[in-house]
Image (cartoon, rainbow, N blue to C red):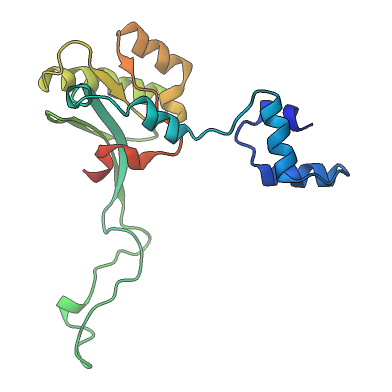
Length: 198
């Protein structure tokens, strides 16, 4: 049961296995689960750690060949959260002490962009629903022109995250057809992408 669960769901935790076995009527410790998995040639690995180890000795020039990309949503009036203000007792409604709001939502825009060590690429406003076809059209209209503008040269590497639109079969085929090398990206790792700071 342990091996079947891990083969079907590699991200299963030891705690989940303990609970599953308990429901099935067996009391097993985490140590027993770890020993069973190790005996069968399985070990616990962090995708982020593997990524870090694989790129540990990459040179600065290796990273200069990466064209980073992402989508972001920008809210018209920022995130709907409480803001605090320092003011005197009777100055609550002075204009400098208030934040404008919009009833029924302030609106937002969705953008796609890219950057490299050589600068920023094109910025594209996404209108309507973002799906795989829209994403491939954005890449077609913006990715290659950005790579040319930034003088990426031969052997550059494209980075995008593991969003289903990015990993769809049609998107992979489009990238392969265009001879674009894609950096393998660990799941749930937006903080590794320098575009997040931009």
